[in-house]
Length: 164
Image 1 (tube, rainbow, N blue to C red):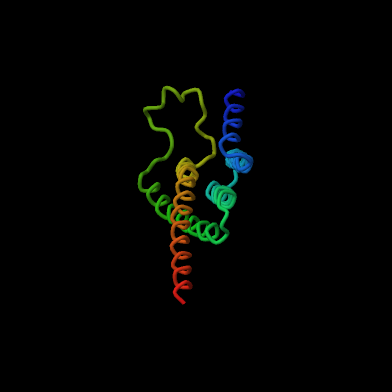
Image 2: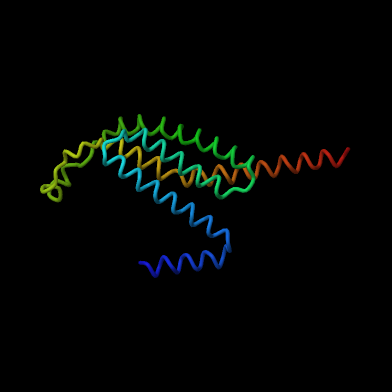
C-alpha cells in the first residue's frame, strides 16, 4: 500500500508540478477531517452538528485551496453552503419517512454476536453519510459554474469598456 501511495505522489508531482503539493496538503486535511468526524461521532457528539462543522471544513479546503480567483472562490463557497443546507432540508424528512432505523431482521445472523446498543442514531448517521458523500459534487459543480459565469461577466465588462 505504501508503494502505491508513493507512486501516486510521484506521478501527481510529475503531472502537476509544485501545485501537487497543495493538492496533497488538501487531501491530507480532508482525510484528517473525516477521521475526526468518525472519532467525534464515536465519542458521543451530536452527529448532525459535528457533520455540519466538518462539512464546512471540507468545503473550505476543497474550494479555497483549488481556486485562484478569490471572487470565484467566495461565490462558490456561499453557493456550496446553500446547496448543503438544501440537501439537509431534503434528507432529514426523507430519512424520517423512509423509516430506516438501522439493522434489518435479514442481518440478524451476522449480527448475533454484536451489541446493537451502540448509542448512535442510525438515521442521523445515514444523513451524515449522505452529506459528506455529496460534498465533492457540490464543491466541484459550484466552482465550475461560478468560474464560467465569472468569465462571462469579465468578458462582458471587457467588451463594454472596449466600445467606449
